[in-house]
Length: 458
Image (cartoon, rainbow, N blue to C red; front, side, top):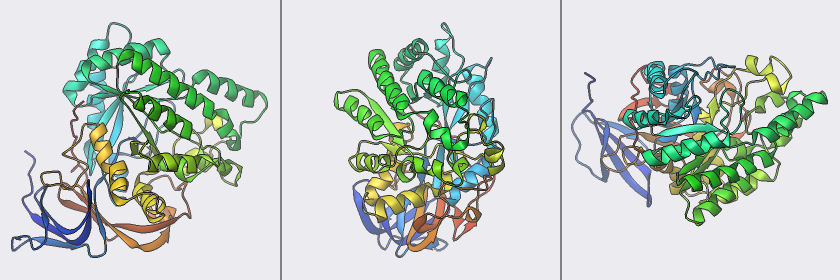
């Protein structure tokens, strides 16, 4: 039987970020839960105190789109669940929503059970979406298992032939079945025909170097697929989530559908808010191979405007810990694994370029990184807030230090970061996961295997 701590801990003197605003107050934790908010709270004689004077106290970050120990069937990241969740903890992330991939021949239940075994060494809490890749007509009933397992979301792809791709008929069939069960699909949207044709044109022209990667997956491919998925989801009567929007038009299509009464949510990522495709013209384009790719220089500002306006529901990283050696093996974008490390830098980057630069308020930041992911993916109110009764997943963030992102300070295996040298304002002072301090003052204090699988509601 797992032991539950009954220790008490007080976070004293910080600025608490609550759903309705900020409050100068203390936060009392008892065992694994938030106990109370206030001043001069009654304390036990052995209460541990964290001095948060001058600091911001946020709900733990929920990164709802990550790939730890990823196996695509073509490439594998060399990290494991201890390494990935350690990096998360050092960056103030207290819950990740990763993916259980259904490999050929597996049932959906087998996919989830296999991933649960793989994740046993996690140091923070975790949940799963399920990549559905092999569910022919007649087997839709398996989706009900996902509700029972606490994994009521499925990932579908409009690209990546042959291992992940689903055609429109398959997508519509699965959206219809998901709607009946209260399952929310999340969709990677890129028109595979457009991507395939553009990639082949570059290959035929001998333009396969990393610097051509952005040209191989045009913005139109994403935008067309977003529009098509929204249409199919409406026809199926199914709520849907659009992943990693890299262009403002993609988000605008979601916002328009939402305004017309459709139940749809979307996310973007730090890379699309902070980087653009001029990076492919620089000396190290291998750092920026990902799908969708970086976009035109005007896109980040346009995306930020939509984030500020509330059109984007959440910000996630799409984290993949491929190593530099894997990335630089061949100067050929068709043979380079796609994906960037980002778990540990999510909060510092979004605080710096969101809050410190005046684009976001602290409650907006907490909404995008904590409350909204919890609400969209069925973790609320246990996760995503500092209110009494919630899990004591907490980040103490000191906004005063100024530094730059440096690979040597991070806990990935990658050996690089796409944000190398970027200025950040502030740093994580402490991370608490269910009441336990797992990172403090530059030291990782967590324990392998203390993370829990969190079943979700639809």
